[in-house]
Length: 265
Image 1 (spheres, one colour):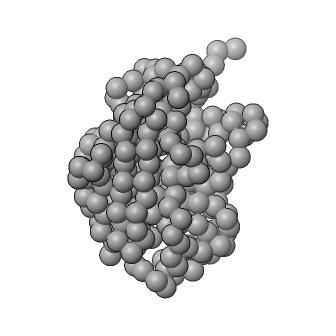
Image 2: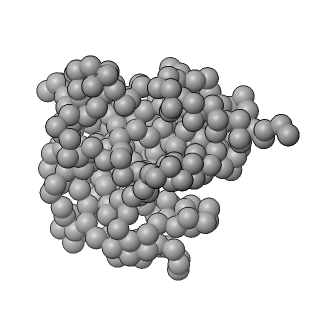
């Protein structure tokens, strides 16, 4: 029996992950507008990884910044799955050998203390479900060659996820307002990206509420204890081997990542 477009797209992206090489876009199989099919690919790849022993620890929201949307030519957010082995916060260096075409962006990460599965999932409910927030670096990556992506390409490819780094300092939402944060991101001590909380769908908590509703509608709601990377506060920047990335997010402080020198590190 012939494989479906969803199965073919999942197989193409799985090969890129397994072999460590970018592949052609999957929009030739899915089209550029069928987001449901793209999420079906993402879910198939997630099921395969979990069956292989991977542990889901949260979600990432992508394409929340207008600047990033302009960079990639899309006009709506997306989300992907965070696995435990993507968290490299405790590593001395980010392992460049695990990445194909890495870029970095600064974000606010929320850790939940309550499920977001029932109710209106309105701003008050979402705010109350947050345990604390930390400064974060998301290391985005693409299995699609040359970052030649449409919305369906990036959604299918787990929202172009790679790795992530969380800072140690924790603040509750009684201690700061996410929308009021100011971000500066440096590569090798050169300022390369700036932004603020309002760049993330007007407020990072808006992004969290969007994700909560979308994940529930897709049958896999957010759960207590999960980490949510809420979306870029400014444009993403290249992060090749040997780069040192540092982000300052007001109130939350600094988060840093040193990328290993060699691709095979």
